[in-house]
Length: 142
Image (tube, rainbow, N blue to C red; front, side, top):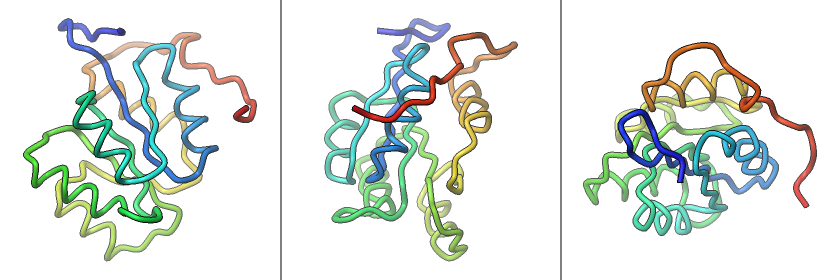
């Protein structure tokens, strides 16, 4: 397991029904962090309960349990993981609901990997220049 500067595991969960988003973020992060993925809110809740990631990137609009519903369940359970919501549509009402339910922030798609990197480094208390572990090979999921 990859550890942070304090010895804690650096776990991230990426939740999105779009496989390409899950694949891209995992590829960008897995050299430095332990990355889990989930395609829906139910699976996300299972991973969060079992793995206790410090950071979650979660799509708002997913079939079944939506990102907003999963966020609400996470907070009701008293889980304090940092959650950033992802959205393909900038609907301010939905964004405000997410922020009021405890999301740290939101990102609109298409995602900018530089912004993801900054968020991750902030959550894990990292500073300094980036290195080759942040480079992403552009390929599609298998």
